[in-house]
Length: 245
Length: 198
Ligand SMILES: Nc1ncnc2c1ncn2[C@@H]1O[C@H](COP(=O)(O)OP(=O)(O)O)[C@@H](O)[C@H]1O
Ligand SMILES: [Mg+2]
Image (spheres, rainbow over the protein chains, first blue to last red):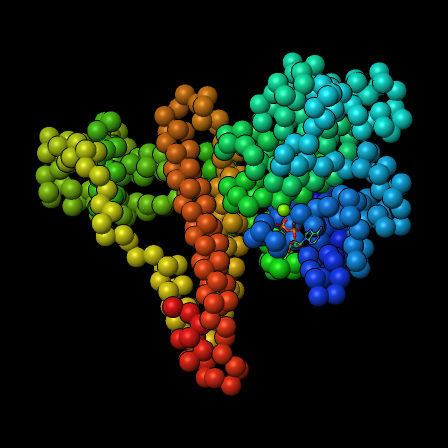
């Protein structure tokens, strides 16, 4: 499944992103190489301003690097052009934000169906897939509700459904639990985790260690550089002891 | 101290022999704090000497079985009604290491912090994996599953607190470095570290 044997779903190669010019230039990322494979959830941690959101917006094709290559399922996002990137955002990858970013005038089901309809699928097909995605995140009964009439946790579930609808292989989440209480946050992680266990690649930015711990790998960013990564086969004896129970 | 009280508390449930005590202890606490059988028997000998347990014959296979005495019951009751002393925190190797790292010349404190953060995060990932794999604490009927899940929670909270503390140390260190810019490389390392940190 995961690991270097397969090719990554997301790959950043020597990516640099400079915001602004001249005196005001900020190097948000400096030569970052990073990959996420099918079936794994990767957490990105780092202090505020270390480049986490920049990394994610580049991975999601919402921004383009100053130098280096970002590819999703082997497709170079820069080469795909703006139209190609927009298409990939509707079909290959999903994005979850801290503040949910749902469209207030649309119901939950319509929010989830929107990327599919924009992609030219029939309304009926899009709605059927949207209901499937809502079922996956456990809120079938909220399909016809508007965002204003949902709790934060419910809105985030809708946002996750929108990010995974139609079998998208890459899920990107920027502080998805940031606006939620601990329990609700765990529910959101459980959903992301399940999606990755089912074969998607996930990348999640978080500053909460407890939430990052749901990931298979934790990558640490400092000043636009990846400084470290967890290996994660610690405390094996403890794990073995539980496996025997 | 802890082992003694834990064994006494287990014996409140009924007479047991050493190996059983070890098994019951680990059912409740995982293998977080492994107990060897030798340690169990040494402790039982001491408890017997102090009149807190007594031999209660042997089972069919010849294991010597122990039971708790009235004095032992009082001891357990006292343990549960007295808070664990926190006035003298146990020595914390990490806190001591960092205290020395920021004062000893030539130590890359940033990488001491990052290495620890990685290691602690890796442990937290393991605990989280164990929690996910284990029975749902909300639905489990087994008291020792609940016990083990609470022990895991304790490990999670401690690891989480450690990561937060490391983040805090890093922020303070960076601020200290900004407020007092490092002297020119010509300065001796000892002078440099005295001036940049503390
Ligand atoms: N659009 C932008 N224009 C100018 N600077 C930016 C812009 N976006 C981010 N930055 C800067 O890039 C750096 C990294 O930002 P960001 O990726 O948002 O960090 P994080 O998500 O880790 O807090 C910061 O110094 C930030 O101020
Ligand atoms: Mg950010």
